[in-house]
Image (cartoon, rainbow, N blue to C red; front, side, top):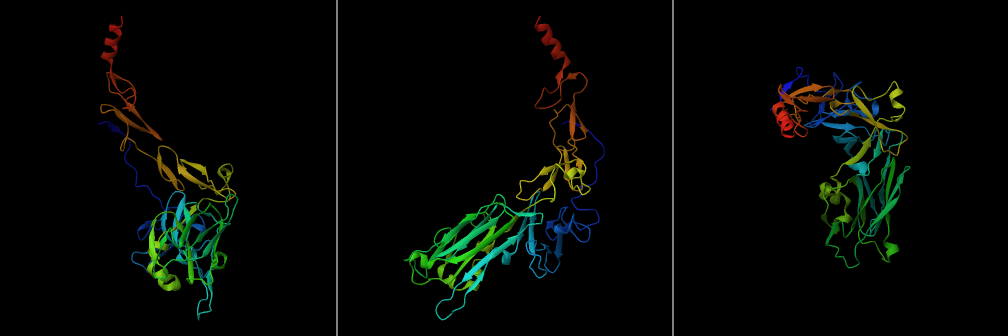
Length: 355
């Protein structure tokens, strides 16, 4: 094993602003997000830790609706460029039409607006629509986004007490583009397809991460009872979080380094976001460094971790890298996948043999 020559180990790397709460329940909250006063980069990244639950749950306020009475998003995960959130009310659209003696019509629409915020709907999401004779119209508003739709259809011969499947009978899915604004609305299509009456009263649409339950079955009769449907198929239909791309907004890597509010700290690089917004960037530690780039990155001591020095070599740590030194009597770069360490007498023997 290579001999390590390095300074004493540093303190554990911090991902949270000093003096601030680092976790809420089972989730670590990395800066620029933060819990508590002056613990985030700006109010858009404020996380509220609800200790009513056991374990506590982190919440992001509803950035797509600045109504103080809006239900916040539960935070499921935070990555380098994305945040995964849940808000079943905001992610769900439902339409129930009058049928029989019930003349009431209920309709709710998915509407999300992330303009003037550091968040953008990710193209890692999809819209799932369930119902018979219904059209889910997806409208997006951004530079790169486009509108689309999908129709959920049941055969005329479909048994009312039978099953639908997703995707398949009574269900359709469509992907979305990255966008700042999204609207999903349901429309009754039974008359366009030559039916005299609508067979099932309700239809539903949900937006969430692609994946999860790729296929599931449901009772068609539950489409006449929205409460029963959402209760029975909550996990399969509404079990996936919404994926949001996040960035440091209002600038890009061309101009941000000259700003007093530049977010990338010591030993980090600025990375422009591929975003529909005007500007936006995130930060990443330079090669050979680790930590939170918004707080400052620290040198990785490769001599204490993995390195490519040969067993007889000596590893010497350097800022952002390391060197492999051969012992006395040997020559080379000291690396396993390089020249390695070659004895000097071998060089002499080779030289003599070539004469």
